[in-house]
Length: 134
Image (cartoon, helix red, strand yellow):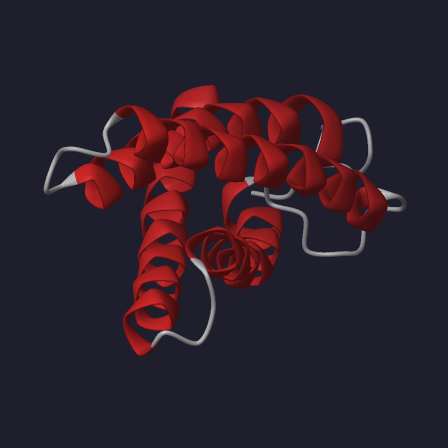
């Protein structure tokens, strides 16, 4: 079961990262906001997609799981903060590199992805909330 969940989570995560990255880079490229705010907006845009895709596809919850929305919001508040802080730290450390933005993005995304999977599996969509559907 965890192998299937992890595989689907990686697909959903890849799509989420694509949404995050395109939003982030678009906002930075247009100059509409600073890098940190653009990173947060990109992350939150991907979050909307991630909640519904992981709820239904990854963890098989067709119905609303009581408390899942606030648990998801708490998890994402924590991982958003982590993501933005790791991104900023990496940008500071890698400031002389021409691909600093891309490397910082990948590292920040990797850290938050690990935290998100564990948080969703063990906290947000834990199997005791609903009977899992096949």
